[in-house]
Length: 118
Image (cartoon, rainbow, N blue to C red; front, side):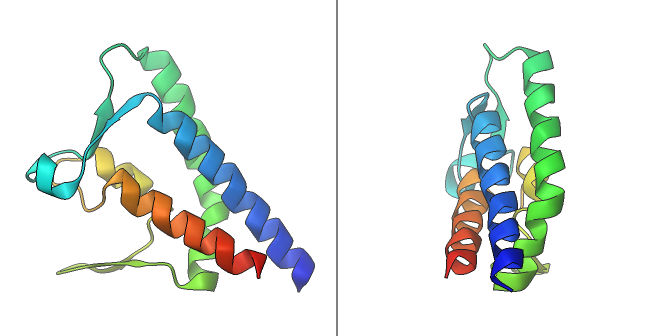
């Protein structure tokens, strides 16, 4: 069991590294400030090819790391939607009327990481 949790923790670590790398190319906002629009968008000085490469890395690592949310229950409750997996749904923060902000994804991935480490 411990070996499985160790592997799961490694996938969360990979996701956190990839997500934080991608966030270096983004402007971060939150729900009150965004007023129903995007909570993350590409910085003006970010090269689109670099942004896309980092997005692909986040998407790749999110697939494996999303299992940690199911194991730990680190879902985010969204009124009218229900429980949302913040790791699997990380791209939603770049959509209009974003359901999540970058902080929503950072927090649960760290909580999943802490729970797997126990």
